[in-house]
Length: 117
Image 1 (cartoon, one colour):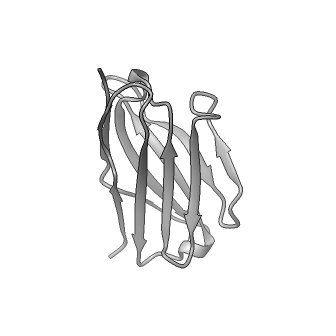
Image 2: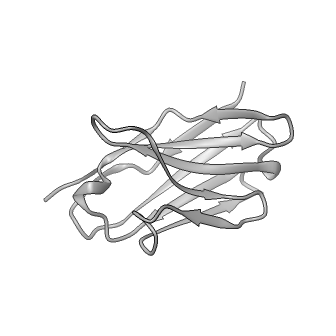
């Protein structure tokens, strides 16, 4: 069974940092595009960063310059380094995998990030 397990969420003050991790199992990680989404209360889920199988990152304007996505194919893990967090970043963060090998998509269970003073 495919699993995407996020970790690293929590509560921080504005200006703080967190690093999220998403460990994947039983997927073709090396041929998967990995994406971080987030969903704030009463808002639609939005894509904030993705990274190609070859490591090319793309960011939403809302996080560009503050968040960094990276991947370790040897560990089948994708990371999201989040700096200068603001209250508007409060959301549940989800990991998503698009396995280009077998054309399947997968979601993690989400991890809560809360930014408040």
